[in-house]
Structures are given as C-alpha cells and as structure tokens.
Length: 118
Image 1: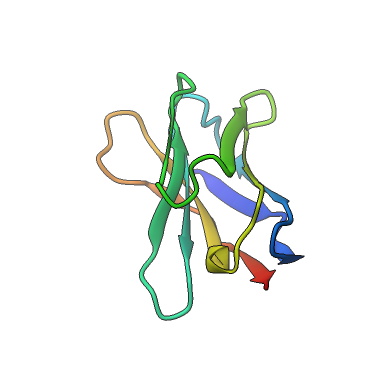
Image 2: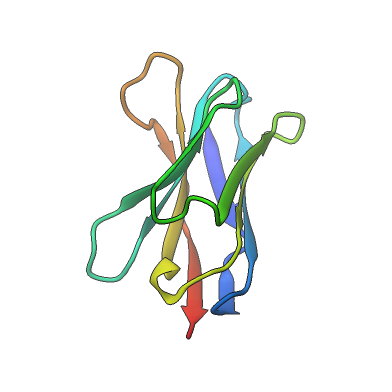
C-alpha cells in the first residue's frame, strides 16, 4: 500500500506563492502518475494538475501558467508550486497517485488547506 501525506498549505495573500509537497511511503511511486486535486467549500473536487512517470504534465485551464507540478523520485515526493495565487484557489488540496494501467487514482492523501485572502 501507498500512503500519501501532503504538507505546505496555509494562509497567503492574493498574488503570493505556496509550494505543496506530497510525500509517499510504503512503496516507490516513480512509475505512477501523480496528481493534485482541490475542493473548495460547497463544490466538487476538481483536477488541478498531473505528472506522468515520464514527466509529462497537464494542468487545469484555471491554473495554467501559474502552477507547476514536479516530482523528485529520489525523495518519492511530488510538488505543486503555486504562484500568483487568487482567492478562487482557496480549498483543500489533495495529492493522488495512479498505478500503471489503472483508470482510477488508487491512493489519496488526507489533504492540506490553502486559503488565499484578497
């Protein structure tokens, strides 16, 4: 089994930056696709970004040009660098990992709160 633990959330002013980390344990996730999702109050969880085992990335239109997803396989950790934050980026951010050939994200973290004040 894989355990994912997010960190790095907090309160930041609009225009500021945060870097989220997702540390995996239990087994290496270097061959997995890893992703970040977020959920704002009263809304459904939404996709933010993903990175494949080969390093290919994809982003939600709302964060393109502001957020960067990366991974450090030596540390078994995935990151989300968030710049130019907006109030609408507020929410709980979740890390997820998808096993090779799986259609679903198999493992989820507990989430970390990001609050952007305007």
